[in-house]
Amino acid sequence: MSNRLRGLLMAAPPVLVVALFVGFPVVSAAMYTLGHTGGPNSVIASIAQRQHVADHWWGTTAAYSEVFAGGQFRRSVTASVVVTVVAVVVTVVLAWAIGLYVRLSGSRLAKVFSAFAVVPLFIPVVIASYAILTFYAQDGFLRTVAHLVGWESAPTLSYTMVAVTIGQIWVSLPFGVLMMTSGLNAVPTVLVDAARDAGASLPRAVWSVLLPMNVVPTVIVATFTGISVLGSFTVPYLTGPSAPNMLGPQMTNTFGSFNQPQQAQVMAMVVFALAAVIGAVYVWANFRTAKRSGAVL
Image 1 (cartoon, rainbow, N blue to C red):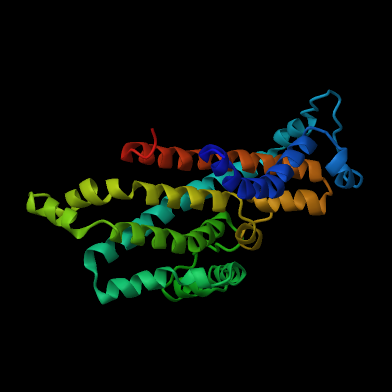
Image 2: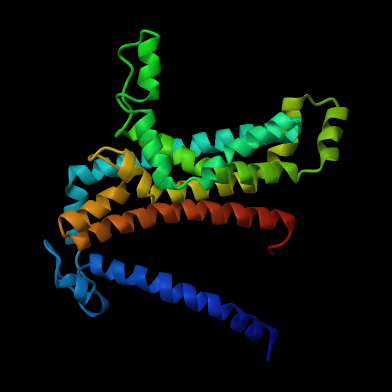
């Protein structure tokens, strides 16, 4: 048996599992959005309303046209993209700031600070969402303090996209801090010391040494956070407004409240496409790093 065939056989089990439990449902859902209501889609098609059935061998785009023509869907897509971008940027900046503080300081206070940053990892998302609602409610802590200092017009952030963004950052920050802290701590101290001995200031050493050697952790934090926020449901469902909201609650309402699974799966395909773009950035960054290191010919 050749080495190539042996390698293919060793890689076959996980590939088959992914193909069976991920690939097949994705293909089935894509076919259903194009109007193919038979086979594995026959059960859901039997109870669906406002369903578009294929009129060509390849299907029909009527479901996509209906969904894309809806103003609420467009507003939900805009809200999802904006919240995702803001959450990714803030999470990466905070993770870098905390990671740099721990890496450069090394004090007990820095370690305690980093430990507090990962506390949300151990708090259920449902509990955190209700805590955010209570904190930013009309009679919550924020408005109470604002009232005590004389600010009567303090905004109520509960059930707004601002609360959703805060919740997404809360949920995403622990992973970012762990990744950036481990990545920055993996850089040998002698490299930073060499840059300082050569006359580089501390900001210059960070820019020339720590930043280039932590491109992959940064890309991992950004892409994983983006995909997680884009497809999230609990935080926007509990803390966000009824409309417009992110695509997760929008899909659930379309399926559960209006009994339109085909339209809901069209929205799911939009989320899948956006997540695939983010995933492509992650794959490109890793491939580029591997190529520079000589691991890829």
